[in-house]
Image 1 (cartoon, rainbow, N blue to C red):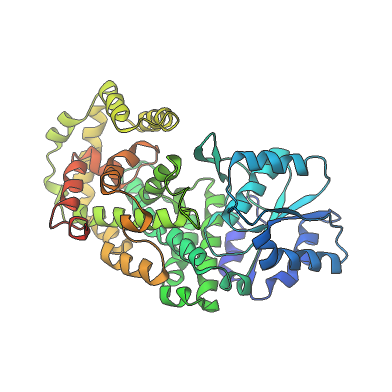
Image 2: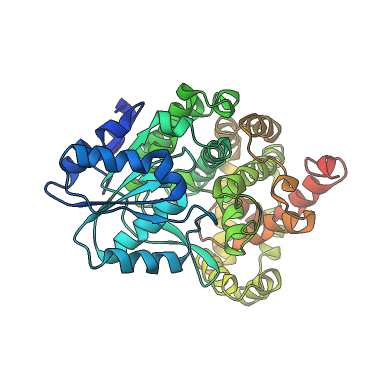
Length: 451
């Protein structure tokens, strides 16, 4: 265990053990026995993940004398989807059994076992098969219910094992997805800095360091990741595990999620990419494009002299609650997204007098804040290079998203989460629409990249 992970475990709420190393599968039995003394284990995987690691996990447990039940194995085809019907199926399997589930797989498999175990009030353990996302050590599971993808509450695993040999052998598209998820922590950090400066949500320095401390190193070798280099994969895995542990420590996704994730969440909520073959569009791939998108917005905002902001004009342009709801209804027609958008947007609405106070703060703080933000951020064009080197998307065409829908995401995604981000700052300053038009102008960042 690295010193970083060991330190992160001290503030994690549920996870007590994390082993991330080459050959870590050999330690599965000892990890399980220490976490769940005397318990019976049941391995949960699909046909792909059982071949990658699950069969060996079962063999190691049996050889060590751990009481085990026959594994439960989902089909390998079609690709396993984290939908609530599969939670119900798995709950029917596990409920009559007195056993601790060991999820062996990636994001979907982990989320299914995590949510099912949570509903049953039972702990669980995870063995990762790809460095594909940061959810292994995070609380909550991303589950599609009634066609609507959302994060459902449930505890994180008590123990997590990541064998670097297994992760390095995973399909490169899964490693690229993990890279896309992790790179989103760059603008997410900037969003948290804004929220902290304006007194909306304070930065927890200890939690901040868990994510941002190893981040640049974990992102530094995209070419090596694409080639399956084990050392580079180990660095990526550490960054992802640390991110999940930081969310546990903070009891919130704020340390790892900002406006770039709101892009991804909107597309997920509306089902974009679920029908892409041969592999469904991953969360990390959507975050990757969201990261470039928000970085491009930041570049324009940082080039704007907000010390000269016309506060009176911004306050006059600020909508009443009723007019804001009308706007939300214009931009959101999905029957399940709309109520959530209204609830989340209204939760962060402020009255015009309070807006004036906040904007005076912005004017006063901007000379210092823009320097802090510039130090945190990476340019949009550089992010595109990094993502492409890792094999991840960096352009709307890469995820088969139409240009009209993509452009509207800048406005629509601000409405789906109450979290304060750069989108809120730009909107409150009456600059968001203008920035979006500049981005998509013929000579703008996205305008120059249109077909």
